[in-house]
Length: 246
Ligand SMILES: Nc1ncnc2c1ncn2[C@@H]1O[C@H](COP(=O)(O)OP(=O)(O)OP(=O)(O)O)[C@@H](O)[C@H]1O
Ligand SMILES: [Mg+2]
Image (cartoon, rainbow, N blue to C red):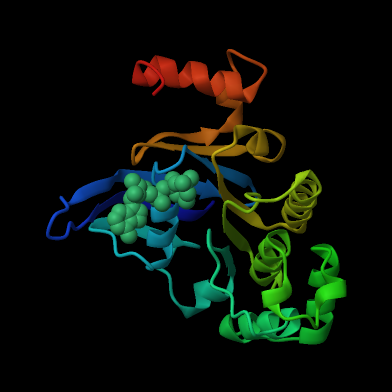
């Protein structure tokens, strides 16, 4: 079963007075199998964030169909999704706890907030900062509280836009560990990165986007045929399919 199904997604950003309109997504289609960790890979500016924003309706696609859990996105589906944007909007005057409580109520979560808050802050290694205002958080701490808000209600589906960017090696390890735990819990994960090495250790499914087009959507294993190293396999594959690297 696929938890997310996307087909025929086109997006053109309208130009202004001196700017031409530009199509950035072309018939984007992919399907994310339940219970798998799915990587969304592509270089800078290839369309990852635009695609993810279209999934949630933050950007209106020109056409295309998007289904979560077999249905269009509605309040019931939203409750089951955790989302970490590329650039989370953070209210800097809130403390870590207040920020998490806000997200807890935004997703309509029910249950024991204090216990969920304590547990998720421990996992992202921010227990010490629970009552500090976000304005005093470092970049890495903000990234981790952004991940905490996506996870706090134990969603069935996690959509994370570059969850490891800007983190030091310890921070990256921590996020990878959390993603492994989430998968073990049964969550389906879709996360973007321009680094294949992030995907190599974690993913079983790979969606590759280049210049707004999906080049591959399927098992990671099919990328490994020619090379044991995913990065090399990817480069060889691109050479074969696109006639060269930029
Ligand atoms: N609001 C916008 N208006 C006009 N063009 C945009 C807008 N948002 C994105 N674009 C363009 O769409 C293309 C895809 O951008 P997008 O942010 O989706 O890339 P990305 O794959 O997420 O890149 P990165 O790895 O740098 O985050 C880029 O050329 C970008 O300049
Ligand atoms: Mg992006």
